[in-house]
Image (cartoon, rainbow, N blue to C red; front, top):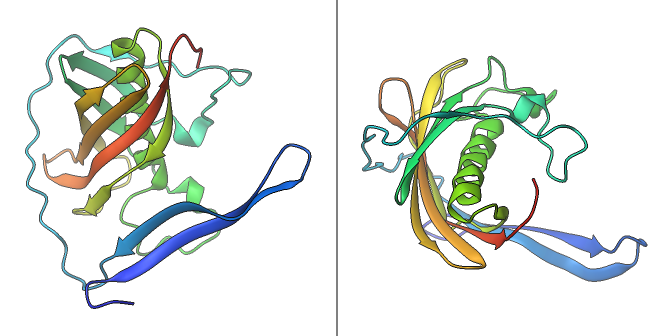
Length: 196
């Protein structure tokens, strides 16, 4: 613990398909958690969506990338230029929390996944069929908690898209237009010509 937060690291042994240890204590992510109790201000306003809305259809179970029913929160997406907007409906209950105490959760983790999925659909269109594989996320800030069954909008801003890499920011807004969370510096690998 330092004066400006707690340094956190998630590590785990990485094994290949044969069960052989490839790398001990592989770093999955590192973060600094601010436990001061002061919520950071998210300076973001929801802009009106541009472009036509497209309904989202999730791939079937036998697809390469499959999202089960608890993760299917993204309903529609509109995009124009470097911006995209997705309509997300928060779940009635936080199914992915399992039997853990749900008190204190700011947002169901499936909502963050839905925002990443919106980034993926946007990249799919922009990169002519490019499938995204997450690499890293620089920063995530939480605003107010989301409410069960709340109709939300995610705004995605593409900062950079190369042949092999995308860099995007996204903010999830509640039905009242207030920010629920903001993610900056989402980096993903773009696999061209893939099938989700």
